[in-house]
Image (cartoon, rainbow, N blue to C red; front, top):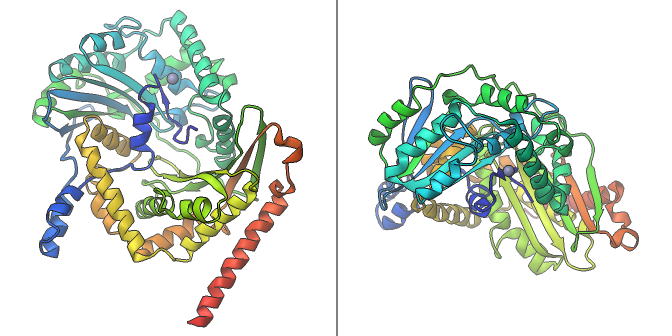
Length: 509
Ligand SMILES: [Zn+2]
């Protein structure tokens, strides 16, 4: 399922990228030093723990392009990335898919790089390259030995300056994307269903559209659409250059000035996006599909992004971890181990967005289990969090787990560039990334309660429920419980139970 709404030029790196960005952006790892000073006085320990993670160095060229170096000199290799602060959400209404098709066309020739040659040249250098498009951003990257850095920068700048967009390649690449949409979305029942849940969740908002585009609109994209999008958004002042690995800013600066510094800045249209309207009513979507083997129970909610509410976003990262990180997590214990309702369960919060973030819940019911019961049990777990029943130990353990895990990000070559890039193009600052561990560690029980009350309470915070069934269950299994009324009754029942419990506890005190 494309929870992240990211489409790749090629799909090899998909898993790696999602592993980095899905559950952990912005991701830092100051914990290594914390471990080393565990027996030191508290003050010293605190300072050591909150050193900047990546020691990234930043500057801005005269034409407005931000340049970042993330040094790691273990091997003579660099990852070179250019992140554009534009993606599917910037497309005009009726023109979905333009940002992503343009990403494909970036490999089809610019003044000094013939069509189809870009990746071949990188290969002959012994490197690899890729690109991806999301709602908010589009990024291109190459990993090569340090002595090829200048060459890849030159090629990247060439396609930032302008594209050939040969008509025959536009048409053939459009067919490639049409096929990509079939494979990635339409032939995958869950992804296809999720696309529709998302469209309803973000009704009349740019995030309601699929990054790859609606089929009817992809089919009508022409050369002019691509040219216009490139002319409008591909400019140095709308891009961030990040080089990680065997590099320092001192070495990078003259190269960046020489190669990217000569590109003219453009007036980028401001993102005057309308806020997403409040949801009205309870939405349950039901779909039966012959390709589905197992029933799924799904639930989606809007959530704040890091840019919108950083404290809540950090709190939600911790709540996500407590609810669904591993076999000891709350949802797994409740739904899989204790209640034996589901064979798998997941809850993920994504906050690296320019506009709203989102929360996803998905579970696979065991045979004979009512999926509406799973949604009710999930809501009950959310209500427990809203009621403030996360213990201090749980909170501390989640902080430790997240910060520990982030240590690994520092050691990879392209990981730091991915993390820093994604955070910056979605409105976070470099300091937000460097001091993420400090800020996560500072989240209090109060912050957790507030975030839960504001964004997770199923009584006040509407979401979308989806039930995806195998085709053969249409008649026997299409039960009453999936009707809006009974689902709502189930929720109300849970709410009643929980309120009752709360009242009881109060009385006991
Ligand atoms: Zn693609």
